[in-house]
Amino acid sequence: MRITERKLEEIADVIIGINEARGKKTGEFTYHIVNPADLDDSNDFDRLEPVNLETEVGDHNLVHRDDLLIKRVSPNFVTLVTGEVSNVVVSSNMLIIRCHQSVVPVFLAGYLELRGLEALKHYTERGMTMHSVSKKELNEFLIPLPDLKTQEILGELWFLNKQKRDLLSRLSEKESDHIKSIYIRALSEGRGR
Image (cartoon, rainbow, N blue to C red; front, side, top):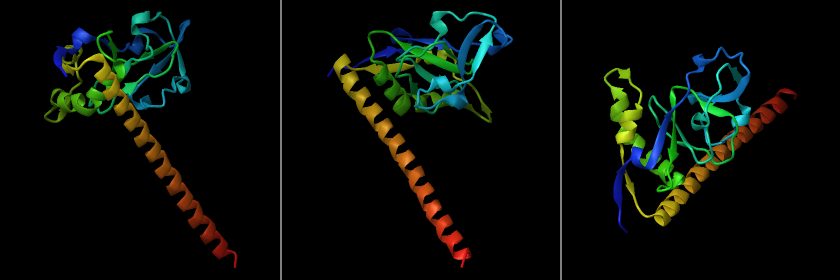
């Protein structure tokens, strides 16, 4: 298997989120704005509050299926947009990474989450101040690229593992809730005697 290294800017577009101050949030253009606190793997963008902006956002700045979303400050995971979305934008403290045809989005998401974000930490942790990852720094980041078939396989492996971790986490929460209910029921029954 032959691996080539390419700069991120050669295989993807890095798009900075919009500055919400562009509009006074009372305009005629309705969008859902994703902030870092909203990021997770649910891809449930409809749950976000709609915001009305005075300025229309161009298609390039809208979130699309297969886009990667990351925080600019202390990026620690990647959100892969897996479904169709409409009128969704990200805030200015986030980045959209939109892959070109030479890279499989799920592969790049997996690589960035498993290896790349660790390497980017030296950009964000400088002394006591938390700096944000710049578009320029991200564009210069080197990505190892195997052939497309290998990218698909590795990306799918990462994605399935991520889904498994999410399911195990939710199962653990449900088990804790169940144990709590047993305690509450047992202790409340004991008080009635």
